[in-house]
Each structure stands twice: as structure tokens, then as C-alpha cells.
View 1 (cartoon, each protein chain N blue to C red):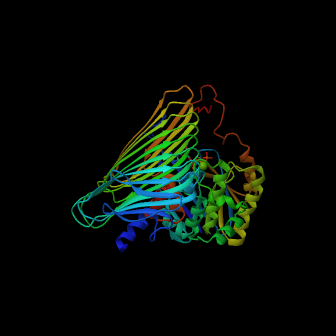
View 2: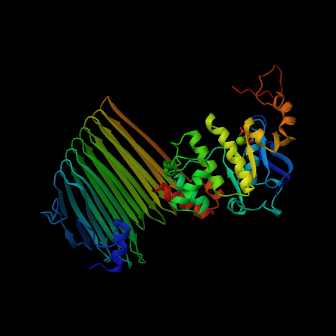
View 3: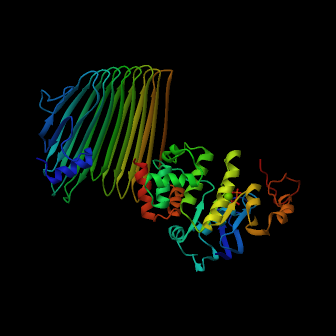
Length: 306
Length: 253
Ligand SMILES: Nc1ncnc2c1ncn2[C@@H]1O[C@H](COP(=O)(O)OP(=O)(O)OP(=O)(O)O)[C@@H](O)[C@H]1O
Ligand SMILES: [Mg+2]
């Protein structure tokens, strides 16, 4: 059912060698390829037919859902709207990702909107990888959106990665945090050539004692460009931090704008931002361990994006 | 084993009253380090010790003169080539990374990935806590911790020539003695030619030869006893109270 190309893409975006265990939904070229549900995790197409609804029963622990999307059809622009209802007190991992293989001059793209409704005291880990490959010259576009709503004491940890080959990306993350909830986002984006990526993030700390930490790591090679915008809005006694680092190589360009808005006197918000080349002392240290310049740069970038 | 021949490192001063003037930070050094010996280099702050070490490692470019290592002229070699030739350097101010652990550095230094061998290495450098291996070498490490890691990565290279730049800064009182012993043991067991830059008498005592650098020159070469009068001579120290009318008065406040 999966050909070699599909398997390669699946491996890259979902770390899957084959059809996964547990609940999953694999979408290929805009259509459902295969799906499995489990006793606690239900997946069905939504009413509008625009995507899927994943419902995780309250109290479900140590289960995972894989929902990879693979694209290898020239000229296709696939749009999906997926909703995840994470039941109270559950603890689950959701692995999403989109792999594009572009074989010709026609553009290919995917736009995935993922909405998470995380119930009271639930914990969810969301891992999303985006990757494009193939010999074709067609433009590969990936525009992911996440919308997160955290109920009281819910926790979400999100790892969002764009590993390479994506020509154009418009990334959007929105989150609203309820009382006592916590959101950790780590976004890693690497661009090269003439690629462009824009990441917009809007995190609203609405509940008392909510906490959020957003970490962004960008590597900008060739003539590529990345813009990063993050806003944290505090509407309650809360804690929020934004940390964004960009490494520029070659002729890359970057714009980083973290913004903090306090609408409550007990808000504690902070940010750190840095843009620059790889630090000279890091380069000399690794070369003095016997690595060549190229090996050194690779190791530093690998670590930075880890 | 290591020869410095008329070695200079010169810069053009960009600030202060000397702005635009050339300054020889390393000022015509000639010296031969013998194989397998233990050298301590000391001297006032800013006298050129780190600059010399970085010239030997290839981090600073040589302005004039030559460096020979085991009979071969290495003046034009890159850092990587010198590392592969058997020179290792522990930085005075070690680099901090993002996402690189102590384990990663040790693997890069040795090519070893196997846990058991890495643990042997930890034991050799006197680090008993195994959890240390997965510590990120980042801004969160304490000053002493990063110096221990720095030292370990140098020993892990099994260098023929090891240069330690103030390995004891930030190291607690309980660790300095064992650290001196460790470097002595490396010297005797592996015949490592050892150069320690230090202000600490424990290292000066351990050395076969003490070299004192002042203003880019060796002001003294010999045993520690002979160096003692100079170590108490305040005219060498550049941290002096300002006297009225002094031409080149420098205030360190
Ligand atoms: N690349 C450079 N350009 C200009 N000045 C330099 C450069 N490198 C070193 N210096 C200057 O040369 C002098 C010697 O520096 P160096 O770091 O070698 O001193 P040191 O003897 O190691 O001192 P310390 O005991 O404080 O470590 C200092 O005044 C320093 O500012
Ligand atoms: Mg120094």
C-alpha cells in the first residue's frame, strides 16, 4: 500500500518505517490512505468533509496518534482542517507532519489547520515535522496553523519543525491558556536557497497562574529569509517567556520581533532575542578537537536545532 | 618538540592614546619546549600568555617568525591540521553551545561513541558523576563545571602537546590538588608535553620549568625557586596605584 517514496516521506516526517501502531490517519495526495482507531481514540472525517476529528477519551494515558500527510501529486494544493478533542486527565502524544515530494515543475502545497481543545488536567505532546524533497522545480509550500485552547491545568508541549526543502512557509500558532495551564512551544526552522519562511505566534495567557515558554531556533542559509513574530498577551497573573535565536549563514536575512503585552498588573513577561553568525569561539573549539570547518558548522547547527 | 622562532603577534591599537600605533603583543619569542616535560607559564594579566597559546594552536595568525612542531614547520597549518598533528588546547574561556552535550564533545574529540569507553574516559579525567556526560555545554553550566569539561576534552584527545590555559580558574579548593596530580599523571603515563598557564603556585611547583611572560617576552625561564624574587617584584605587576605626574598611568578601578 505504501511505495518506497511514501515510506521515505513517512520516515522523514513521522519517524515511521511502516504503518504505525495504535490510532492513525494517513492522508496521501488529498485523500485518506488508511486509518485506524483504538478503544480510546476515535478518528472520523468531519461533517464538512474538510478534515478529521480526533477524539481522545478522558483518562486515556500513554497512547499516541499519528496523522501524517504525504504529497507527491504535481499541481495539488491540499487544505485540511483537523480538530483534536483531548479528554480531561489524558496524557497522549500526537505526531503530525507533512512530506512533499515534488517531481516536476508544477507547484505542490499543503495547508493544515490543527485545532486542539485540551481538557482539564490533560497533557498533550504534539510533534510536527515539515519536509520537502524531490528533483522537481515546482514550488513547495507548507502553511501550517495551530490553534490551541488549554482548559484548567492542561499542559501542551509542541515541537514544530521545518527541516528543509520547503520554498515558502507561512506558519501561524495561536494559543489561549486557561487557569494553571502550561504551554511550551519549540519551533525549529531551517531555510536555504531562495526559501522564505514566516512564523507568527500569538499566545494569550488568559487564566491565573498560566505559564508559557516559546523557543524559536532559526537557521538561515543561502539567500533565504525568515521572519519571526511572537506576541504574548497577559490577561491574568501569569508567566511568559519568548526566546528566539537565529543563526545567519551566507546571505540569509532575518527579522525577529518578540512582543510582550501586559494587561494585568501581576503579569511576568520576558524575552530574549539574538541574531548572528555562529560564534567564533564555538568554531575554534570544535576545530581544535580535530573537526574540519565544514564538520564543525554541521555539528553546531545540528545541536542548535536539536 | 615545539620551537618558537622569532615569534611575533602584532596588532594595530584602535583605542586609547596609542590608537593607530602597532603593538607587539608577542614580542620576538625564541624558545624550545622539550618532549615530555611539564612547563608552567605565568605572568601578569594582559602579558600575552593566552595570545601565545592561541598562536601555537593556530587560532591567532602568526605576524612574523615561525612555529615548528616535531621538526615540522606548522606556521601555516589550520587549527584542524594542528589538532590532527597532536596539539590540544584548553581555552581560558571555554565556548558555550546550544544543544551540544559533554558526551557530544567527548565523541568529537575521540571518535568514540560507546558508553563503556566514554565512562573509562570520565574515570581517567577524574569525573565520577556519570550524569555529567549528558550535561548540555551551555550558558547554564557553572564556571568550574565548564572548566572541568574543557580539561577533559583536551585529555581525551591524547595529545602529544597539551596546553591548559588557567585550568584552575573557578575550580574549588578540593579539586585543585587532584587536578595538578591528573596533569602530572598524564605527563608521565602518556609522555604528554604539558604547558599549563596559571597564576597558581600548585602548578608552578609541579612544573619542570617555569616561564614568566612580561609584555610579550619571556622575562624568566628556569625553576620555581629562581622565579620567586620576580613573583614578589611589584614593578612587574601592572596593577599599581596611580602616582601623580606619571606618564603612562593606568588606573584599574
Ligand atoms: N586580537 C587582538 N587584538 C588586539 N589586542 C589583543 C588581541 N588579542 C589580545 N590582545 C591584547 O593583548 C594583551 C594580552 O592578552 P592575553 O589574553 O594574551 O593576556 P594574558 O596574559 O592571557 O592575560 P590573563 O592573565 O588576564 O589571562 C591584552 O592587552 C589583550 O587585550
Ligand atoms: Mg589569558
